[in-house]
Structure formats: structure tokens, C-alpha cells
Length: 399
Image (cartoon, rainbow, N blue to C red):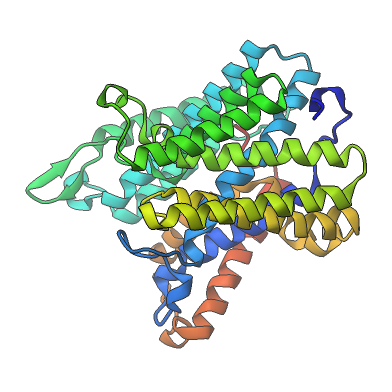
């Protein structure tokens, strides 16, 4: 298989943006299920230690997989602008740092102790998110550089103050600000770091990418078998466990396969190969499930393989609809969630805080059953609409 570097690759694939947008909408939707009653069990997370997955358990791995799908395009674009490998490494490191910072601040909000901190609980997340925007907003080139610098400094200063005053846990067992489990964004950051560095140093060699995916997939099994020596415990679990990086590397591998056949305009073979790849992943999931179960909270190999297969099949379907049949206009409404994904992810934190400040209480009738599910769907779409509006006025996060 030829290296994608020798091919004229498109800067953006519509189906990847659309898949990312739909995944983000689904993420906001399932994250809002906590506000409802009588939610169908198959939609919720499966409890820790239980063999099985619900709808909520396939969203996060899909997002990790999509991070991998878009990575070769992003790195290729930077190489075409003249970036060296070292500059690409710097980019990956800085982006990882940003994701880790955001993940750690948001995860500390889950154990926030208002009395010990001296601040209302509902203020923590929106304040953190506002700082993220100040620091990582993609400011217009025409913006005053001193004002931009001041905004970034304010964001950093406020985060430092928040970390200093933070107190979490229960009374009698107060905890200080710490990484905890890194949060969703932090886990994405670690997986992005490992897969990003692997992709850079693979230098567009397909077999090196295949080897990287195989390594982390096997590492997932080795880790769950308890065969990793303790000497390696200094490596973050998100990397050492293999599963999360295996998901992201699966996306990278899929893009290399995709580029190979798409450059030849051979959509038939492309589809057959990716469907067969999905079938093989499902088989791997079936084979490994008896050993370690199928579980998101356990990050098991079976979960890695099955969710990778689901995401590939979704990608193939959307590719045919959007890129082959040219129906991208069908997805115009959800576009902001695919192009300004991180900002869209943060919007719910502002929304929940706003309902607390304004004392908004929805009627019980729209917080249960099917009506409640419709409410959560419209909430997710509202977040997309707000994201689109903010993007138009120059608020767009770029790491």
C-alpha cells in the first residue's frame, strides 16, 4: 500500500466532520440523561463490573476513533506548510497539555466541595470553561495582540486561583486539586499524545501504522491479563492500558486504508475492505469477551474492538451519503458540532449553570420517558445552535 504522502489528499473529508458532529450531539444527549427519569436501560451506561454495553458506552470510543481518523489529514496539512517532525511533535505536546489541563479542571468539578472551597458548586465548571475560551480561542488575525495576550493571561491567572482555592471530597476527608482520573478530555489527551507521536514517527508508512495499532491492541490484552511489570506504572493508565490509544490508532489506520482506495476512486473496494475490517474486529471482540468481558468502565479489549467496528461502519455509511452521493446539505444543521467540536462540548456546562442562576425548573412531565428523551435531543441541538452563533462572532476554540 502506497504512502499517503505521495497522494494529493483533500484537506477535509465531509464525512469525518459529519461523523464527528453526530457523535458530539449523541455525547451531549447521553450526558443529559442524568436529568431524566424512566430512561430506557439500553441507553444508559452499564455499571462497573457488568458484562455489556449501552448506547452511552459507545459514544466516547467513537469520539476517540474519530480523533484518529482526522489525525493524518491534520499532520499532512502541517507538513505541506513546511512543519518539520520536531514542530509536529511540539504541536502534539501543546495540544495534549491543553486537553490535560481542561480535563483535570473539569474532573475536579465532579468532587467539588462548595463549603470547603467557599464558592457555589455550579460556578466551577462555567468559570473553568470561560478560562479555556480566553486561553485557547482562535482570535481573529486583526485582533489587537495586546488585548489577546491580556485575555490569555487573565484566563491562566483565574485557573491558577481556582486550583489554589479548590477543595473537594466530603467533610472530614477534604482533598486538594489533583488529576484524579484526568477526565474525558484528559483521557483523550493521553490517547492523542501516544497516537500522535506514533503517527509522526511512522512517517506515512502504512505498515508502521498497522504495527502501532497492533501494538496497542495487544497491549490492551496484556494489560488486562495483568502481565505488565510494575516498573512501567509511571506511564499513565490511558496509554499503558492500551485500549484508549488502540481506539485512536484504529482511526489512524482506517484513514490510511481510506486514502489508499479513495485516491484511486475505488469506492467499491474501499467499502469491502472496511466492512471486512469491521467484521474482523467484531470477531476479535467475540473471542476476547470471555476473558475480560465487554465493558466501557473496564476499558476491555472486547469494547475496543466492537466500538471500533461500529464507528467504521458508521463512517462508511456517512461517506457514501455525504461524499459519494453529495448529500452534505442534509447535515448543514449539525455542522458546528463537527467543525467547532470542543466549544460545542463546553456549552452544556454554561447551560446547566444558567438554569441554576435563573432558577429554571422544567415541569416533571418533560423530564421522563419519551418526552424527556425528546427534551434531551433538543437540548443537544440547542448546544449546536449556540456553538454556531458563537463561531460567527469569532469564538472558536483551536488547540
